[in-house]
Length: 637
Image (tube, rainbow, N blue to C red):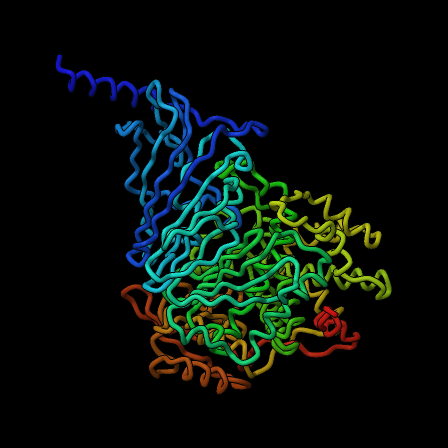
């Protein structure tokens, strides 16, 4: 038997021996021996191809390495393992065989040869071009990129991610600059090295880079801790903001500290990507946020109107979601499933406070805030899925709803814990004010639950987990009440009506008019659809395709459902203006609106018995005092 033949048999035996290996359980106290080095080569980021090299201290024998699966803030097993490519292992310069676990696709088993104490791994990450969500979506353009460390590393199984140390570096394209909250070490040309950090902190600290990168300091040089916005754009023109926006952004740290009474970061970086070629989302981190939005959002009042709320929302998460975290999301590694049952606090409360900060900083006028609140209230008050699926289940089901199609949203529901959570927390704020005769507000709860003590200088952030009972106990410390029943009644309700008690108690009521607000008009332009949901019950794409049909509304009752295509209105070729004209002309008359609709290869005319004209949501003053305006006024001194 030749040596080559014998070595092949040995390799096969090693592979077979790990075919059914288990993923080790996490030891919460054991420190991983040694520091893992991670060198990321993003110098070809414009090609959407990223390279990484790891040096991992190991012991001979079977080692299990994991690719991050459950990514904090993404609320699901969204780690883009399908884009992990080119994986190879070496020991003392010689290739080492590996095998993916037969059950857990994110686990890699490697049998390390005797006498080896360092395992080298090389891998590539192929950033998607037009699919994927969150950090697994498109991440680079010709002018900018974001390195999400979770896409470019492996980590040893069996250890708490706070107990694994990484020494990381990143090489960027020539002439590009970076922004990150990760403490910086030596810089050598286009290679930036970082100080050693735990795996938790590393993954929690993405790096933005770009040819056009602007750094905007948001608090004064004497401000402690420092807050800045690191903005990468696809053009220099995108960095020319709407007049006044920078001044309003500089109010954000002051208003946030006034709201919470403390900070829990060493310094904070808004990492803002302005591009039409990356996935658009906001993802929170403890000392930064990764927000990717359209190229001219801050240079165009139209875009800014629709999408501006992402900036304070992700900032609020530094307190609500990072410093204080639901216990089901405080997992010891990226392998354990996360539980989303408290996302109505994590995301819903953040939505409420983020929108309040939009108004307190002047990023929104009070009128614009109310336009947004009217949209939220109307959408949920017309969501038929409320009659079978309680809000609590939208949080529990987050990992399935996050990637659900848009069609049938009215009946399925989506991640409604964001917007309906906002309504519930507004009502909570109003209940606190009522019970204390205006002496206390939700700001008092924010101080108690998310406030002191501030993080000491140079200390890495830590977090405190919480349960439902902790939230209830915190509210009871502000003012005694049956908060458990108050919250559960709303979380588990299958009433067809949205919880509008807070809107009404704050001095306003939801009504419908025949004129869209500026925000509604901007949303239709930005999202490329026509919204006649509150009249005939349809959301319609630019080409006439029915995106959604509202249950119990005239179009649905007539038989029109998602996926069909609107061809003509009353015998005339469909356009949004033609449809709206038909809706207006049918008001007060008896003749139905006739819609010619294509369903696959078939055509049919549907008659809609609707005669109430255009309907657009707005808020109107009621008999109660205008407490909402007090909630929205600036609080920082």
